[in-house]
Amino acid sequence: MVLSRPRVLCALMAGVVTLAVGLVSPPAAAAVPPGGADGPTATARSRVAADVLMTSYEPVKAWFPSSWWNSAVALQTIGDYMQRTGDRRYLQQLDNTFEKDKGVFPAGYLSGDPLLGNFTSRAIDDSEWWALTWIQAYDLTKKQKYLDMAVTIAEYVEDYWDDTCGGGVWWDAERTYKNAVTNGLWIRLTAELHNRIPGDRHWLGRSQQGWNWFTGSGMINFGGLVNDGLNTSTCQSNNDTVWTYNQGLAIGAGLELWRATRNPQLLTTVRRLADSAIGAGGLVSNGVLTESCDVPGKVCDDNQKQFKGIFLRYWMDLADTTHDSRYVAFLAQQAASVWDNDRDAAGRLGQRWSGATSADEPNVFDWRTQASALSALIAAVPARPPVRSLSAAMTPAQPVVMPAGGTATHVKLVAGLQATAPAGERVKADVRAAAPAGWTVTPSTTTVTLRPKGNAVPAQASVELDVAIPAGTPDGRYSVTVTATSDPLLSFSTQAEILVAHTADFDTGTAAENPWLWDAGGSQSNGIQNRFADGHAYFVYRFPFPSGTTSASATLTIDNEYVVEVSGDGQQWTTVARETEHVHGGENKATRTFDLTPYLGPDKAAYVRISDSFPDEGWGGRVYHVSATYTG
Image 1 (cartoon, rainbow, N blue to C red):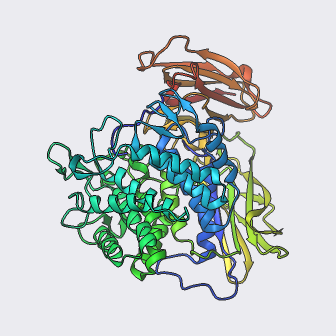
Image 2: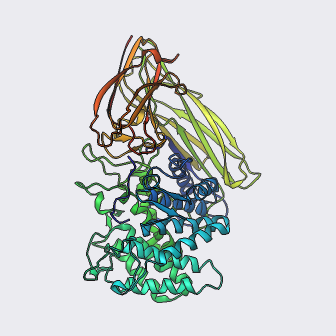
Image 3: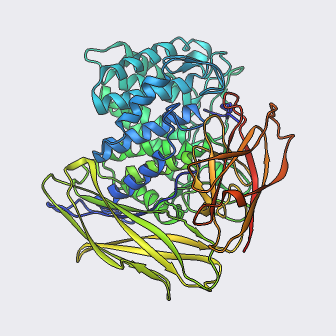
C-alpha cells in the first residue's frame, strides 16, 4: 500500500553490524566532549550508519519507498554526511533522484498527492523540503541546476504567502492551515537562497518578512517552545503538540538569517529557543531528545519517526555557529546514546534514542529511524573532519542456522573494512576473531592492509571467516566477535549475532523476523504482523534447512495483492501463488502453506519471495506470520 502522506505536520535495511574506530592524526585532535567519541571514531560511526541507510535507497523510482517528503529529508541527511565527512560516494544517487523525479507524476506513484513537476505539489511543506535538498546538492557539487531548482520551488511556494493572520505561508494549496513547519522551512529556504545568490535582495527580504511574522505569530509560547500552528479562524496559536522538528527548524531559520544579516538579536532568539528545548519542561528526557510519541502508550507515525533528526541537523548548525560547550555536549550525548543504546545487532538505528523497548511496544527500526538517528551521529563529527578513519561491518550480521544432527554446521561471514587516510599512506589492521567455547573461526587472526587515497572514496578490504558450530548446540543467539587493532592505542570490535534454531516461527515486524529476512528488497513494516511490498519492492525469507532434510514447507498468513515465489538458490524463481483480484482491504487474508520440497537447493536451503501482483496500485503482498517445517 502506498503510504499517502498523512496530514499530520508535515524497510528494513540489509543486515550489517558495524565496527568503528579512528586513527588519530597529528596535530592532536580537539577535546572530546563528555560522553562523546573522538573525531575519527565519530566519522567512522556516521559512515557505517549512512551505508546502512543507503541500502534502502531504491534506484528505479529514485527514492526511499514509500514516502515523498521523508525521502527528501533522508537524502538531505546523506548530503549532510557527505559534507561533514568528505565522503562523496553518494553524489550519484542525489543526481539520480533529481533527474528521475523532477517530472509530473500521478497521485500514488511517489506521493499521495499528484506531483506537479519540479518537486512541487499541493503540500507546500513537502515542496520546501525538496528545495532544501537541492541547495544541499548545490553546496556539494556547485552545479547550477540544483540551485535553479531550489529557486523554482521557492517561487512556487511564494505564491502561498498572503495576509491572512497578518502573513505567513499556507501549509497546503487549499489554504486551510498556517503552521510552524511550513514557515520555518520558508525562512530557512529564502535565507539559504540569499546566502548563495550574489547580489540578492529579494529572498533576503522574504526571509526577514517571514521571521518577523513567525516570531510575532504566537506559535512560540511563553516557555520558548514552538507550537504546531495557528487556529486560522482566530489567528491564535492552537497550542498543539511541540514537535522536535518545529523547534529545530525555528533554530535553523534564525541561524541562516543571522548569517545573512549578522543581526545579534537573531542569535538571542535562537539561544532562547535552544535553551528552552533542553531545559526543564522541554524536549529532553534523562538527557536524551525524546519525541512526544516516543513514550509508552503512544506510537510515532512514519512522519514523526524523522522529526528528531531534523532537530539535530539544525542543532549541529547551532553548535558550529556558537561553539557553546553546552550545545556541543548535548550533541555528543545524543550520538553516544544512539550508538550505545539504540543500535540493533544489524547496525540499524531505532526510533527511541534511549533504546527503550518492550515486547508490547518494541523500538521501531526502519530507514526513516535510520535517517533520523544518523543526524545525531553526523552532528558528532567535527566540523573539520579528520582525514584518517577506519570502520568495518560484518555481513551477514544476523545469520540463522538450522543445525544438522551429529555434525558441525558451518556459517560463512565477511568482515568488510573501510579506511580513509592521505593518499600514499597505508592503514594496517590486525584482525582477531573470537567465538563461544567449543566453536572455531577460521582464520582466527589475520592482517589487512588498506591503501586509501583521501576520504572521498574510502578504501575497502574484506576478511572471509568460516564459523564452525558444534553439533548439539542449544537453540539461542550467539555472538562471534571480530577485534581489529591498528596500533597499541587503537582497538575496536564488532559482532555478528548467529541464531541457532531448529524451527522457524515468527511474527513479521519483530526482532524475531530479522535473522530469517534474507533480503528486505525495499519492503516496509508498519509494526508487528505487518510487512508489505508495494510496487517493485519485495522481501525474501531464507530457510537453511539441515543437510538431511527430505521435505519442507512454509506457511504464511498473507493478504492483499501478493505474489509468492520460491527458489533453491535465491536467483531462479518459481511462482507458486498470485492474487489476481484487486484487493486493497485485506479481505483475502488467509493462512497458506507452500510445499518447498521440489525447490530445495543443493545445500537444502529454500527461499520464499513476496512481491506485488499489481505494482502500479500500491497494495502489495502483506505478511503477518511465517513458519517453516521440515522432515529428515
